[in-house]
Length: 109
Length: 112
Image 1 (cartoon, rainbow over the protein chains, first blue to last red):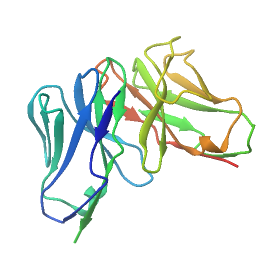
Image 2: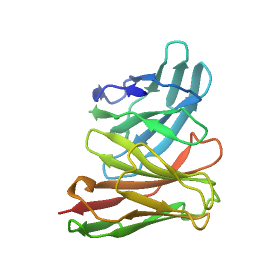
Image 3: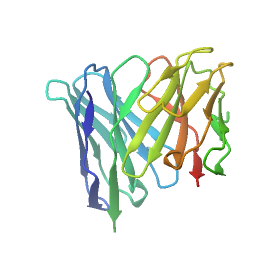
Image 4: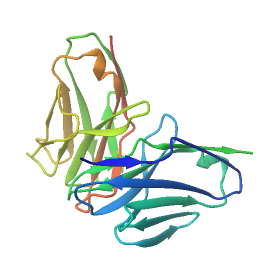
């Protein structure tokens, strides 16, 4: 089978740095994606790691370790608008993504 | 470009009724997907399509049917709605890489 584990909730202060971890078990692995979803909105793509290492996109970075079946999303200089749910998703075939249950991030003043 | 659009946005059905959800994309994507999202469950794949005329089952296909007669459209049908199908339904499309998907605004369906 396949499973993804990520914390259900994280709280952080505006301006701080927060890391959202994701561990996965899957029969096939092409890469790890991250999506953001605000309340009532649609998921939007943030980043993708196919190889080990860090990918940086502005204030957001994503890391992957294939040997540890582990990745994380790092959000820097947190802003109130970053309060949202964040999903990791494994691409385990050429076509589809398997999503985790999501991490609800609350940014406080 | 409108991206991915879904109709309707909201719908209330009675148990046993049928309906079709329509998804359209204008990005010329090969792949299209239907997900359902329930509280605390994340996004679960119902069916997907890798090209016009093709469909395949995802994680939770029971009670749903799909069709992809045109590349830009992907239809999700509920033949006999059940309360367990109360959910928010998202359509998505993506290119051949598969990891970056573009989602529609969602359809909130309630079955009573």
